[in-house]
Length: 491
Image (cartoon, rainbow, N blue to C red; front, side):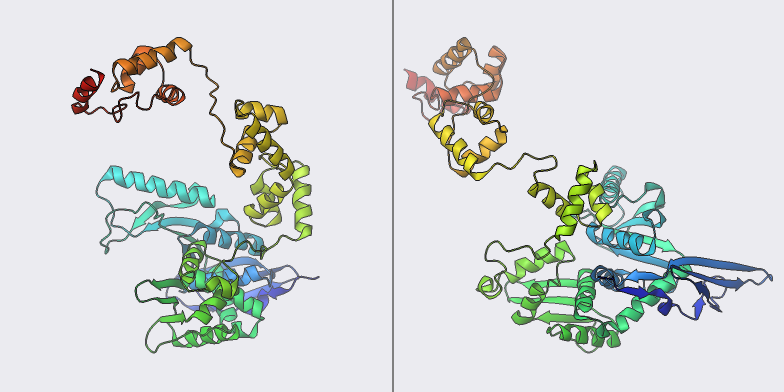
């Protein structure tokens, strides 16, 4: 089946506003072939000189669900100004990565082209040590999650907000990452594409509308859950009145009512039937953070699991991997590409899906799946031979120690904790003697005298039933008042 394509030639404007000098509007020139579009414009300067600006775009991009998801994200969180710089920002690394990967795959725009910095919603710390610690934490987090090059960061990597009451960075706050590319042609064409798709979104297929709205909700949606009043809903910020009508019509096509208010930028999706449709159509799934909040909110409806079967046990995965992809993953793995990330990048699928296929086929760095019959055999043997250690049983059956432990846990077999380290008998006798002489003796005193660890002392006490030694509530208690009671009890 041939893949549907979007022709970028249809989104090229006749003129372009340049930001040199007085922001004059100049003619945009372009040529194209079956693969690429060559764009250029000339800017005349006051001294009689001129300068040509150019950029090359691929002519076609895929008309896929992922394209519409990214365009929805860019409509929600991308730059909307004509200042010659394209910008996208978000605080979830998965959404940042989704945009970066899409630009690389569809527009051949590499990760190394993005400039980036981090914005946090706190005042700039006065304590230099604290400032250094949080900046190091934020930079390391975003570098690790996005693999953006360090040399493409702005000189001031972390920026702060002046007019806020927040003084400290919360432990779960990783700030917002902003990625930018300063090129007037690039910015104009991308914005023209997003704007045109948005205006005509209701002319596209239902699947394309769903994907676009997924991106919008992930970018602009806010979960509104008020436990006391039991008001549940999704707020979407839409400033322009004409845009609100486009959104409302798009949601109506999916059978969802979007409430709009006069002179108010917040729109609302509420009522049980609308929220259930959001759930069933998976419109909330693009943002993991918002999806988790949404699931928690909708679980509060009485009998929701009977209405949707969504929370009523294990379901078949909605995004089951096609057999063709499974075969490709296995072929790459057998060819020597064993790293999950390398396979996922080559096939343009998630790490989770690759891991799932490898696990189902007993591949990768994991213990081989033990058949259920063998697990029962292991658990039965462990029950009949409680004097053996897990390591000995694992050797007997030719499996890992963890496999024995899982089998015992599953079938509720309690095994004696046999340590691999054998304690000398004279040390055991000495520990017992020390407790008989002084039931409140400290672990540190025994450690110092016998040169053993706390865990060894605990083990000896447990195996020899030394919990109280006849002096209840005294063992392990270092309260000086109990020393008197201890002496009286021994007398």
